[in-house]
Image 1: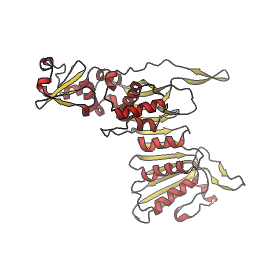
Image 2 (image 1 turned 60 degrees about the vertical axis):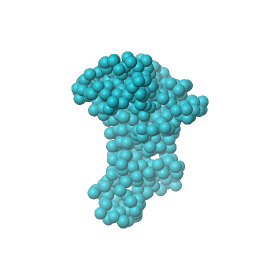
Image 3 (image 1 turned 180 degrees about the horizontal axis):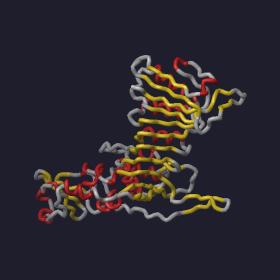
Length: 404
């Protein structure tokens, strides 16, 4: 690293020199950095030796052997290390985790015929103010204050009502050992500092990758993301990246689906569907499959009415553009009548063995999908019966997969 590129901190202000020009910054974001005339630079700065004298490649090799907590500790020691780790984060343990889940600080367990509230002891990671120190514009500060006044929650929650503190649980396999890390977040931020902490943690998560993202009791409120990053001048992506995502509980359905559509990228996602046919909810379900191919490779819906299956079959056959469609779709425990190609209803007796057929698009016949339907493995003897006693067929699993 040249002398020009080294950062020196002096009385709360950061200075660095690049191509002969001095710069200074009070915040931690580079877009707040301003040039300064050399005669305005404190004399102590010009003679002060930077603490870091290692080449970036050497520092990177050193940091690669550190785990999440160690990297976070190093990042909190100086402005230089913070920006260095932010820059090379994708190559470090700071950004790779096995699992992400948000949950309350307490849990309920069944004991002696009743649920008992238990609060396990958790060692929370302390976040140094140095990490979330950045200049807040007057306009954004006013928006944040209005959000605080309205008590906009940081998270959507299931049946836990009295949640003031939320645990962000990160699981990481490091050096053949499973490590759990806990970050404490306010569900209802009470001041600007708490808003900054939430923003920093979300920014950290958006720059991470996860093997598994579990959506169970709590989920980030999309409204809070919009509020925190209203002036996202760096155009930073605001999505959680995971290999597999599982949405278990059914609550705040439209808000959860909006989070999935706007703030999630996942190779595989499993969604347990509520028994609702509300138009706005079904629209998001449809949009995920029809236009989410660049976000999701494999989407599974569980316990969905076959009316939605009808929509997908029709979309494949008649849509003018199916290039953005998800490549593999699975329906688990689907109920209701079914059709095959050319709108032919599947007869009751056909369910004795797996049903297989192909679909092609009328505007681009070269694009083909295979469809496989079989009785549900877990509900092999179950049938869907209407209130009038009519039976349409067994509860089934169906897989729709693009062939080419």
